Image (cartoon, rainbow, N blue to C red; front, side, top):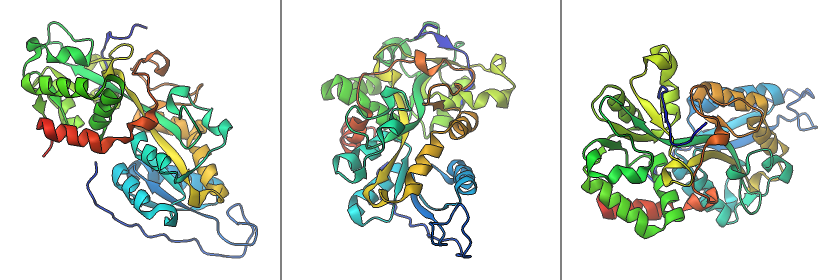
Length: 352
């Protein structure tokens, strides 16, 4: 399967909002069931989730039923929760952090606030989605950056994000500078190609009248409906749309997966880590192992159309296999410099 070809498929921050969730422990009935800690007490786990409750809630319920562990969840934006964990330090009540982006976890890893995971657990996933050094975190699912295109509006399709500064695409590219995934992409651009290259690309895109949208979903809708020719989003927005329109054949848009080490070929990961506070709670590792189990991985593929990172689990439908995707050669831990990326976007005039 060739990279850089057009795939016809359906599509699918550091705001300081610190919303605390209540932590309610289960009743102690004195029985020695699976959830008992050996002395009749209910086993518990404190989870910080940067992914929303609609997705994570059913996973937590399945884990609770399987393990007998009562999971108390604080939901929020990954960057916000990462900032909270950094401020709380070793005083935090959190035992597991499940983040939508590796960058938020990278900050904690470099601050030495995470407990190492067993090597055999981390090595379950593709080497691209685990630390190049250490075992502080493990990738859970993959999310590929793509270019979405309406072929009725674009005669000469781009194969790289670097092509999008060409005058022939003037005013025809939609993007969402405020979006966390876009900012991770720019962070990867900075890390892999350098600050100057990233700045120049952003300035050239702005000069080429790239159109700012509110969300990835809005970008997809605009391209699909013919309001604009091209857009920058994650692959799963398309993939989720396929069944909604009755199949790939009913899609008006197509996906382009950039080749090789193109910055636009970034495959980022959602990731999980155990805090030092959770190092002595067996339930923390059990939860991460559940996310990496075939059941957990299949739930993500089927519900979110993200890529499973454990070999042997099927890929999402209507997109190329994970093994065929490229991306810049970098340690995803190094995507921790979000603040610098936001500063760059502000200086270029894309954030206020």
